[in-house]
Length: 184
Image 1 (tube, rainbow, N blue to C red):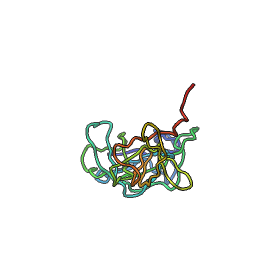
Image 2 (cartoon, rainbow, N blue to C red):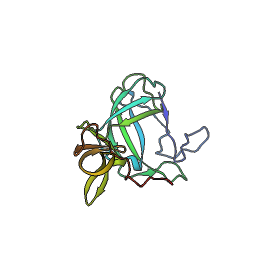
Image 3 (tube, rainbow, N blue to C red):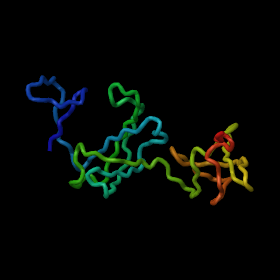
């Protein structure tokens, strides 16, 4: 198998095109050590680190899930498309089952990086957590109205926060400050 390299414009070398000395035009991949290159939005890259576990699904095999590990996270975010200011962190993932014929260079995939493993079972939506003077709190429903309830938190991701103390299972909390969303 031969994979053609691309130039800075994303184009492969073609017949009759000048090739500069030292510029590779193709490479032979080692299929037993495949890696996936992921691009994670800058605002979603909270907590990315080497050695985190990754679940991968190839577009060609949507019913199969493969495992991998983060090998490298770029030191800075960059744009990946000319004229588009959105920045991404490049993440390289080593694929555990790369030796089989399923993985081929250039195949598209979806990936989930397991940034945080929650040790507690009690999780709250991140938008329900408020912070004031360095302390976290939620608005807890008590007797038909919402009252401020201090909590301590643990791990978090983009959507959920681990609640270590201050709430119990079954408690109802407000997703925003009570009274702010009244219409009319």
